[in-house]
Picture 1 (cartoon, one colour):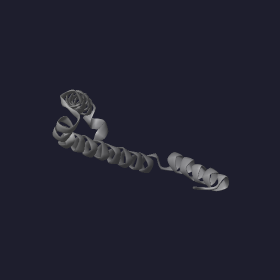
Picture 2 (cartoon, rainbow, N blue to C red; picture 1 turned 180 degrees about the vertical axis):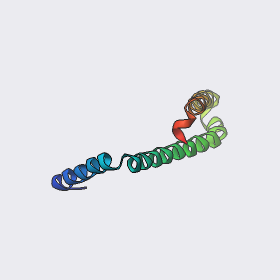
Picture 3 (cartoon, helix red, strand yellow; picture 1 turned 120 degrees about the vertical axis):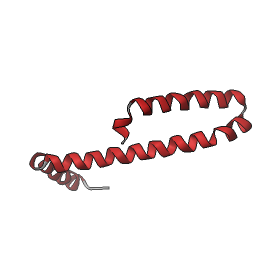
Length: 85
């Protein structure tokens, strides 16, 4: 955690960097967005892999609900794939 003074200075430096070099700041933002996309993709793969075990352990209804949610997630990821890459 940063102190209030350090947080204020950090925000001031960030604002100054954003204004002076917007291309650099855009590259950093893109990298953070790509990292979030990779984590979301990894989470989706893990959930799909655990679906059979969940169906066996929690029952068919829980497995069906999880499958529907994962299909919706896959559809949304496909629809907005440019944001995640």
